[in-house]
Image (tube, rainbow, N blue to C red):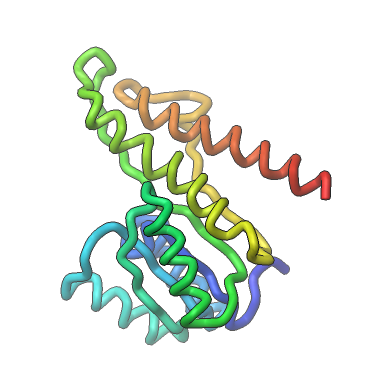
Length: 175
């Protein structure tokens, strides 16, 4: 399968939401070596979550990184390799939802929703281009196809993920 016992996986948005769900699963089922990354500085609540992942059988390194910044992402990839020697997969779960009708939505908010999904995807794809990854997982949403009111930006970000994933799969199949 794609998942390996003691595999090395970078998880963006790894301290909360879907990233945390995957971290716990990989720790418990595969004794994974995880590089959890998020833009936030760790606090005691986050440290408890990391301890829980370790108690499930995983090894954890936390890297504070801004997925919208290529240098930050490159440092994250380098930290993963320095800590564990290789990278088997990337799980890109970082993202935001900030509902508001388009006519009322400020550009700064629009960018906050778009950038982690779009720039995070591109940055991790380029920063890991020399790695022999088993997978690069992106998290789109049904909102990409049937959007909710107030989620124009979220819909656009997820449509990008769908298109980028299709593009990368075509490139992979050419090799």
